[in-house]
Length: 240
Length: 336
Image (cartoon, rainbow over all chains, first blue to last red; front, side, top):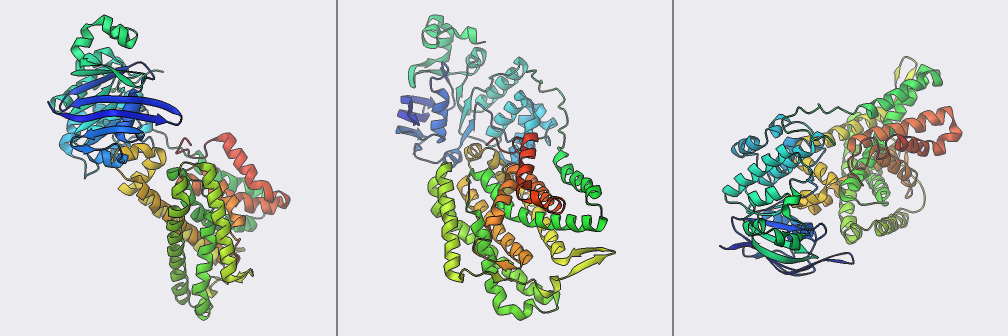
């Protein structure tokens, strides 16, 4: 299977802090790659560095056949990379509709795609003309993901989508991400929720102190409690 | 925190009308204090006209603050440049300016205003590329660079036009007042109100009915996410900066006609007012800027009439009061 995204020896410094210390990873096309690790391991920095929101100090980032480590964020997005940040970053002052209109960069909203999204997130249809700032946390997360998939993207970078959400909404999100995966999307997903990680992940990367300390199949890590304890400090079951 | 399920109904968002009611309440409160209805009407009309002119000058600055997080202390330079450019058009057409025909007057006034906007906008392009671009994200350097730019601009105007005050008489048909009973409302103030309102409506239409406006509003709130959606926000910054500069130029022409004079440091008296308006309105909020400008003008006019000795501090007191009520301004848009 070809790798859609590859990072080789990527270092990122933020101010005087050396966060990513030589990241090597590959995200195979059409797969969901889980990025796990303790808080502060560098997971969010990895996604932001790929997206160009923080510039890599050194190393290579290859997306498809293009080198992107020196490109500006809008150019990376235009290559087909969607980003869902941990903070969701919906535009509170804009309505749900306006948030999605803005995300549909290349033209008007596609009704078929909208209906597909509404199938997973009916709340977005109901609050179509409501300000995004007035949505609940779960609804904002739905909007944030809808914004990333309103147009076809080659790669989705998603940062802890289930964090702080009610179980019913987590289930809806998992179903949505599964469906996106079935459609052939490639996803690099930072997730702490074991259930979500096990349900969605094909392969897994574990980070610690700004480096990748483990790579393998998600199913293997899910079945190996001692390995989980060694890599993550506690078993994934405890994260449920 | 209680999490709403996706299926839960959402409380309907409330429209925040308290800031809109504020100038209305202030105006009504002044009726008994001022005593005379005609004086109150004259002062209120003067406040609205002055407020509209300040709004035009401040609207660009609030978007520049909100969208670009740039502290532009040199905004006043565009005001003065706009006014000086208008004198260049007025001078050769002095006879037309003083003709009794409104159409003939407007035939000079409109091109003067448009040329002032064009030159101020172009100057904005140069300032953004030369002074602002190297110091994005560095507030202290922005203050130093833009303050330095303002000084250079003022001194350049002195060098080109000399230190004297240049008279800029109102066109003949805009002199005098509309008389309604025992109330006199200056014609020029009515025109200023219309222009200010037209600018406000135009900005609101662009911000709320176009994709460009959506991008500006989204960029004010979260620049990074707009870029992550694939939009090159730097170009948008430049466009907003130039538009803000052009509006400042228009405001400069209007203020010069209001004062009937132009001088290089004319923006000094306005800069504080403009910053007060931008801060109390909420950085990046055009609606807040509009209401803030009217409030500032009301406090200046009513305050000047009732307690002239307080005129110098009245707007600072207003800002303190508003920020105690709403620390991020009347309509908070950004968290900066």
